[in-house]
Image 1 (cartoon, rainbow, N blue to C red):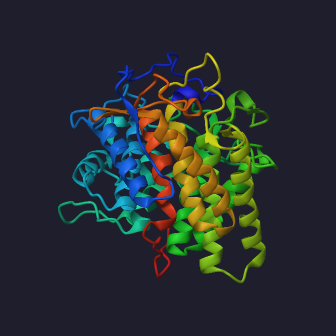
Image 2 (tube, rainbow, N blue to C red):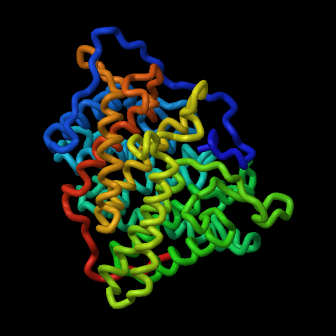
Image 3 (cartoon, rainbow, N blue to C red):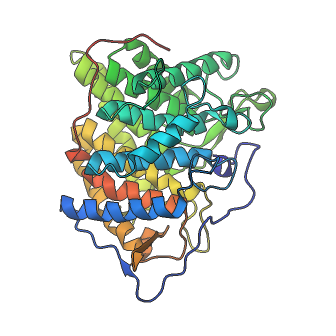
Length: 428
């Protein structure tokens, strides 16, 4: 995700708006009653259809969605996770065949979402944004990925393969900064020296989710290691702000940080902390100290996200670094609210003490997000600035995805129960 990592070398210079749509005066905002599940599902259905029909392209080499190539392959992975969430929450399986086709094309020879076609472009965090879909399918018992036997089509096996790859790369990078996973995993790539929040938060979240699901303490140990490192190098602050990254370039040894804050960074750590709380609640309820620690961390992330990424007195989610006056969010940045909506909703399921706060923030934001989406004779577009109360003229893949995830996040507490594995598995 190069266009937002200001501390990295590989930065996409242009802030392209991938899709601009002019709405006629006859267009109407999508109607939604956030306290009525039928109404929320109907609104989510319209937005999901708008995203899919506007961008789906089986010929695209960027993950079966039309994206600026090649660096936005990650965003297609996030898009498929959004549609997977939609199918799980609503029961509408309209996109299952296309999702499976995209996953089969992009899973790669190692069954870990490292396809050869992306080898010159894929970074650790890009791989993670495809992995999140496998973890989600695993947690909700979604149908297995079809394949010809013998093959690896277990969502758990795929997730373990990817996490094991991250563990190997972490160990290879331990000579600087006392640890930390690098943004890039190929030394020849620009940005290889950047150890950033979205990458390490993604590794943390993935291990925490596997710990909760499998009960395997190995993953819980890894989650502790990653979180402690993140605090030590000040990616995560004592008051639960999450900054963008740090570096080992030319002997810096992570001595300074890039203090930019983005909603997807705090969301990544928030959901990881929630899964660690759930791990102890389910697997080791007698460890009261660990339970209290992860409960406090989750509450801290939710509270800080509420103060940092919700405007109008905490009512409406916004990307504070690019939604100010006379500023525009780039192709990366328009999607970041999708991660916050997605993971705040799932966090509310796992940690009861934050449910009321998360629900309040998400419902008011879902109402505003639906209000930014305009329906003109069945053609739906969704805007970026939800605080305006209307469509703001900017519509791209990320604005659709953010609106979809925040609207459907209202449904997470009524989603099918999260599954757990009876017997621990070894890994990492």
